[in-house]
Amino acid sequence: MLPRVTAATIRREVRLPVRLRDGSLTPARLFTFDGLCDGREHVALALGDRASDRTGAGPGAAVPLVRLHSECLTGDAFGSERCDCGPQLQEAVARISDVGGYLLYLRQEGRGIGLYSKVDAYALQEDGLDTYEANVALGFGEDERDYTVAAQMLLGLGVERLDLLSNNPDKSTQLEAAGIRVERCVPTGLHVSSVNGRYLATKARRWRLPPASDRWGAPLGRPRADGVRRAWAGEEDRAAP
Image (cartoon, rainbow, N blue to C red; front, top):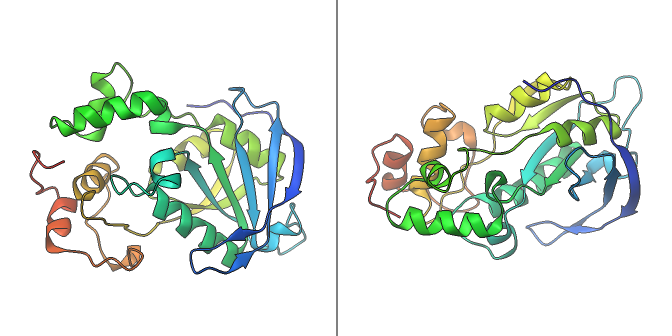
């Protein structure tokens, strides 16, 4: 478990208008930090009411909605459908803009193994391994991410309690261990593509999530095919990419 951490300090704060998936613009503020324990260039994006007031503070202020989003060049920038990272990022920005909070963009490509190693893992997945087995075959842990920096960033922003936008229970466990109070976990949508059913099913099994249901919301205009439902339930063909 993580020790209670020391707050990072805000290095720079700038306005950053952001275009949402519906084409509209929303105000935001981008923060960089000093004192992060891993020395990487992680950033935070304040959205909604936090875009104009980074403390969002005052008696009775709403608990901010927060997303810890790990960098995914292939999904976030190139629109890869092998994963659900790009749609999750778009969903998070839109939902946080509605209610107020922060998106932390963490430089943890490939669940912490780096871009080139992630591409190596993709090659192993094409030979039949799942996303976690591929990381292990390359000599890494199934998930190398450490959210100490996320806790440091949140404390630097004055956030000690939050609603967490995530399906991954490890994020809330690590934040709580670092002294951040997670009031509730808010699940993200199920973003299904023609090729990522097995990937989603693998994550669901590892996180011990229940089968996909309407509580996860609509997957950005994509219907849930019967094959994806079977995959989520663990009935997918392991030979599928």
